[in-house]
Length: 89
Image (cartoon, helix red, strand yellow):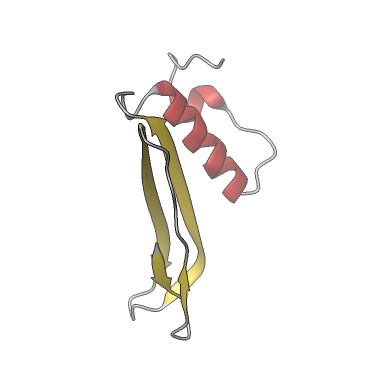
């Protein structure tokens, strides 16, 4: 995984998986109208066994936790962010 930082620097990181696993990488970067990056870049890694369904309730729970951490929230209203049917293990 390689990305360009403000000022032209590049950062590079390798991600390795064992056989039978799938990795999804999502990068959220806020960009101003002049294509200049603003704010911090957020990277979300989703690791699951091959054959497991994506977008499961567990994925919703993890994403809600990531958002709460990035917003520096001390509490999260799980019902509002994830729906009434979310089962928290």
